Amino acid sequence: MNIEQILASGNLEKSVLIGYYGGGNYGDELLLEVLAARLRGEGVQNITITYQDLSLYKTYHRDFGYPLIQMGNKVAVLRTIVKNKTIIVGGGGLWGLDVNPNIFLLSLMLFASRWLLGKSVYLLGVGYYNSTNWYGRLSAWVAGKAATQIVARDHETYVNFQKITKHVSLDADIAWQIAKVDLLPYRRDFLALKSMLPVASKTLFITLRRFKRAQKSNYNEAVEAFLAGNEHPVIVALMEPRSVDPEGYERIKLWQQTYRNVHVIDFSWNPLALFVFFKEYRDELAVVAPQFHVILTAYVTGVLFLPIAYDNKVSELLKQVGHSNILSAHALARADLEKFANAFYGSVV
Image (cartoon, rainbow, N blue to C red; front, side, top):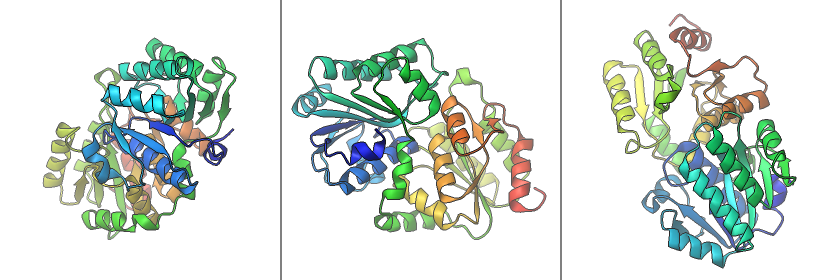
């Protein structure tokens, strides 16, 4: 089964939707917005959404009429699982380079829900990568044994889960479902974003990322070096709120003060506003971003982007859309950015 078939199956009433929603990460919030919109579009009425910080929900999402519970409230989550029939894990590269103890706890919860409570467990558009560690592989094994059905978002994930269960099929990331979402309700969100980020001519849209110390990435430093020699319009964005990455926000604010051609923003808007923004300005924008879902958004909207990857999940996406010459985000150099910018701006940087 693919994601479309599962959404249209009529079997998802009385479901609990679980993911890394509510932390303000662009990719996770995009997955939730698209999945909730598709579930509502398919007429599914009875869905409960788990969310980390309930106060942030209106910042990032429309009200689809689905009740929310706080993910950190373990009693409320358990009570909700007991009352419902199905658990849906809605996307994300959960078992990859960024695996953490919470992923293992999630996997254990899925296992207990399936085999102790008799619930159906769907893992939709998820990722399991060779770049993960033993902890991630153990977590993926537990989740795989818990799953009623796994829909892998790429080939590497499919192969890895096939070693654990026969209940796995290959499809794509949930965000590809944007094509079936009515974007008209997001026009106001787009206009608000447009007012913060004026685009009057060709503009480079660069995102930063918080890399773990062990990853030893040159990415953010390469961006800073590039900006020092660039005179064309640039937008630099954090794809999470400033409260989550205050150090990163101070860094980009300093860049804005130093370079007149640089506008900066943190993630504080509905994720589909960026989709509409990219679509509206696809001829004026080019994207430099290590994040999976920023790259996917650029590709779907027809925006030029630099094919860079920091993990297997991004490499898998880039292969899906036809890129074979992929740059490492960790080893990215100023010269790589200048070459891309020269081709985009059509002039020497």
